[in-house]
Image (cartoon, rainbow, N blue to C red; front, side):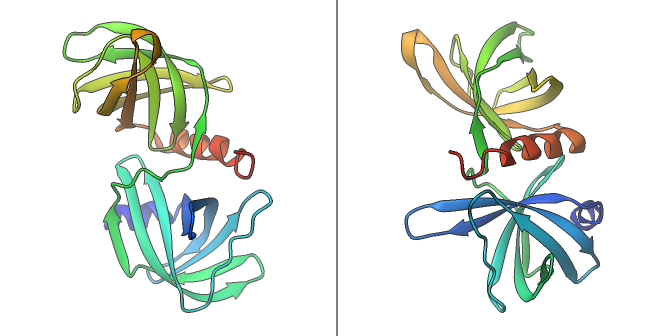
Length: 201
């Protein structure tokens, strides 16, 4: 918990998830200020409105280099530039996959650590928590890998863990990875990149 508290003090970005009847809507926000009991936030989106009602419970997804946290906060009041939220009612490491992700095709260098093999694959989508790519062969779930790829000219590298695999077209395999050592700066960069596509999916 102390790690999460310290992370939030540095104007951390987060993903707010609003559950509707037919789908989950995603919004990006920024922690404007923080003490041990109050978070002041801004939440923004394209062509959509994120409304928090006083007394309701807001779920925020916080991406950190040590994992993805889900926190539940009570909405205390609306401000001119955002909301005040109590912190936290609940804070836990998140296992959910409904993160804001963007379809993007770009080369990614994949190194499987068990045998040191390096191969160029093609990304299918990316989010601040993970990446999916098309690979020439299946990789065992739980296997550790290293990734290197670029997003709009920024070089990104991280270790990762395979979480799923399934056959794709032409004898290739769709592979999903959680990035386990992504830097804080790269996490924020990917979140900023994905936020450009809100409302344009």
